[in-house]
Amino acid sequence: MHVGFIGLGRMGFPMAHNLIKAGHTVVAHNRSRGPVERLAELGAIPASSPAEVARSVEILVSCLLTSLDEINQAMSVACSGKAIRVAVLP
Image (cartoon, rainbow, N blue to C red; front, top):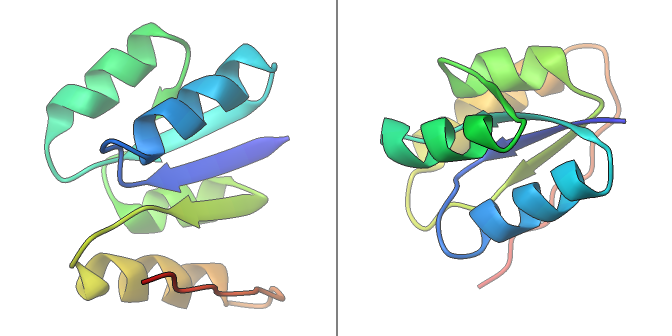
């Protein structure tokens, strides 16, 4: 399964890494490139934008603290002709 991750912080990075270890294809983006590069060394496919992630995957996960712009950009692409479910956790 192709899974996209936007946000590779304390929660997103380990979740994405676990999916890679389980044999899934992970496409990843983060505002700072360091976490993306580290995850790519573990087998992820780096993406240059949230929109690129959304276009490339079946499931999209975002683990973001404050950047609603990134969520909106990714979701606007992901929603195009697809059914989605959005969950926002406090």
